[in-house]
Structures are given as structure tokens and as C-alpha cells.
Amino acid sequence: MLEIRVHCVLNPNTTLLCHSTDIISSFILITNICKLILENMQQIRLFNRWH
Image (tube, rainbow, N blue to C red):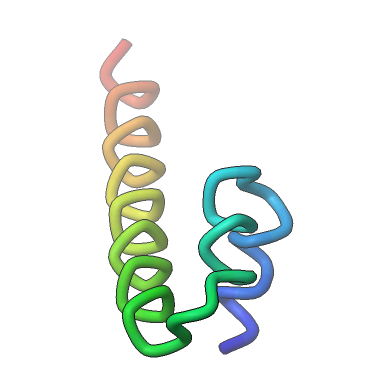
């Protein structure tokens, strides 16, 4: 939950999802977005290592 809250604060788009009326679906969307963000961060780190 803490990780999701952090991402909600960092990302304007996820903040909107956090305040969604449908809590369960928004939670799923937020977790998926968080996974995407983390995957992208890892890819960027790998990219930076090689370049």
C-alpha cells in the first residue's frame, strides 16, 4: 500500500485513480501502473548502464 501511495503522489494520473469511486478497480489499475513504472525504471537503469 505504501508503494502505491508513493506512486499516486508522484503521478498525477494515478492520483485520479486513487480518488476513484470504484475502489477495487482503481486499486487494480494503480497496482498495474506501479508495476509498469517500476519496470520502466529498471529498463531505464539498464539503458543508462549500457549507454
